[in-house]
Image 1 (cartoon, protein in one colour):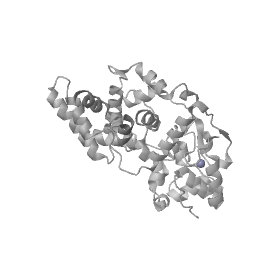
Image 2 (tube, rainbow, N blue to C red):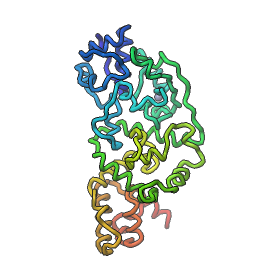
Image 3 (cartoon, protein in one colour):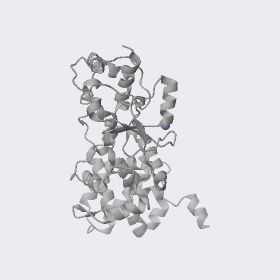
Image 4 (cartoon, rainbow, N blue to C red):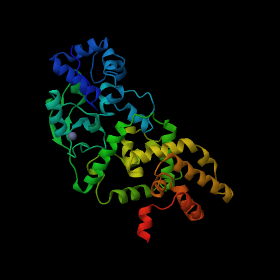
Length: 353
Ligand SMILES: [Zn+2]
């Protein structure tokens, strides 16, 4: 059996579907039994790890590209998530559909003979192709039709996703963020660190009232997205998503991409906040407001210096975003020190004079 080589960002499902197609295999279950060496009764319910351990997939040499597991870990998911072949392709089969970009399909068909499913289009927060700035199409794929055979995009019906133009700028940024996140091959931080990072943002922004969500959450969210209604185009429930971070609800962690965008704006800033949290873990919790001012001063100065040394080209704007509390405290109580160590940029100085 000829094994196609992996296209960048192709899902595991995609490369297997192409394999069957190229080989003209009619019995896909049988093909997968040959590859995995195991009896297979359903392609949709097949555990991804069965395939990941097969010589075939190991031979492809880039398991990280094949599914969303690594991205899920970057977003605070536990390491051993139980994926089947269908969910491994995208984290979830959102509303019974996967997505494609018409231009990517055209390019892939020209280069490889057929279009395929690409991971970067499957994130629930990605509705525009980050490579072509093209609105994605949604393909009808009910789980029950996936049990016995593989489908390529061209073998299914598709319709363009609905996009509200007022929100297009945000959708474009979200797609770009997803693209960067998928490309991140660094070692994920522990899920406890990610949870602390998220919880700190929620505390700093006044999103929590005791252990429950405050009204401020929805106000802040609407302020950020303006008049555009994200819920019209994306099936994500904000309250549940945040409760998922707090451990109250169970929500696919892949949806946290929306929070990363809203809170940090870029993947780089989010990662920096994680680095930050991993260095100063726990110290935030033990320090209370009643501590002497001197200790607070040293504490926030250490935060600021740690940030500066971790980041060439450190800026005040960035510190404000990743460590709002430290920045506000230093600006209000220790501004001479702050100006000396993290001066205003040349640009803002030029504006002043
Ligand atoms: Zn594209």
